[in-house]
Structure formats: structure tokens, C-alpha cells
Amino acid sequence: MSLSNGSAATTTKLFEAVGIGEHFEKVLSVEDAPPWETGASSYWWAAKRCDVGLSDTMLVAVHPWDSHGAHHAGLRTAWINRDHRSHPSYFAPAELQVSSVAALARQVI
Image 1: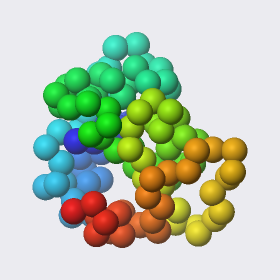
Image 2 (image 1 turned 180 degrees about the horizontal axis):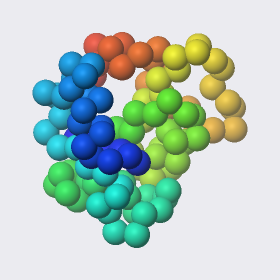
Image 3 (image 1 turned 90 degrees about the vertical axis):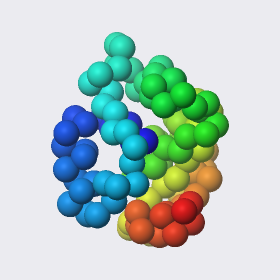
């Protein structure tokens, strides 16, 4: 499952273009969630749509602040650190830190 802050259609096209679309049963957009917030409500909505708990989901982000928020909401987290930067100490560390989506896939599949 993917929850995107972009449209589901755009996300699906991006996933298909890079050859990972087949690995997602659902592509959800916060556009379809009840009043969109950057807080936990969008995460709860997506988990409920997939009939899973938050601890059974993982937010994959390229920004440390996104994984920080998801961590505090109860999700598992992965940070794709494409630039090999140091993780800011004022944010909760992501459970997984990888350099690419392919590297993440190798760790979770």
C-alpha cells in the first residue's frame, strides 16, 4: 500500500515507470482522506482502508521530518538518504536508512 500526498493516478504512473507498481495492492492519496492534515489522521485513515494497524505500516520518506512525524504516530519508518547526509539529531531516527528504493526493497522483501 502506498499513501501519497500527490494524486493516486500520478503515484501509480510513477511506480509503473520504475517497475515497482506490481508490488502495491493499493495506492491511496491524502486527497481522498477526510480533512487532510500532516498529523496522524491521514496515517490512521490509510491503515484502516487496508485493514492493518499502524505498526504494520511503513512510511518511506526522503525528508527526515516526514519519518519523524510518522515515527511519533506509530508507523515503522524508512529514510531514503540519496545524498548520504547525516540524519539531523533533533528528529527521531528512521528504522531503516537506505540510499535508494532498490536498497530498501532488498531489506524489506
